[in-house]
Image (tube, rainbow, N blue to C red):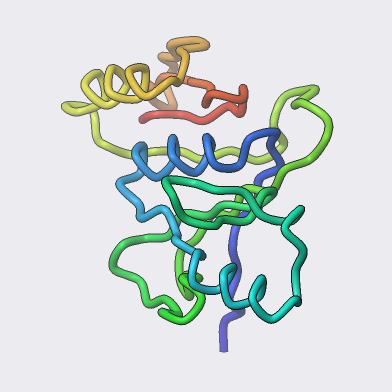
Length: 149
């Protein structure tokens, strides 16, 4: 049986990253407010672990996005399928990614996708055209590289 997994990305602002990648991928930003409220009420977490986001309690150092068609746990808001978790770390990104996402809108939609991602806060790093293909290398709001093919 295959292992369940999620991609975890270190960042300085997990909620900003979740908002960007949720919009970029058309994924659902997870709402953990019911779980956070239950844990606060039970005294299992302290108020220092929590922030307020859109009027709801949220984890201060964690945010996630999930594929909208995948299952999730309604009691916690946690995705059970394709999921990206953003976790706050104290240091900013230092070097080139060792892992990156490739987005595949197709050649006819690449320019429109790049423009949409720029409007969301991404930057174009370079245009690549070589025998293996053509793509745009971009960076998300915290500088993490990804390709649009």
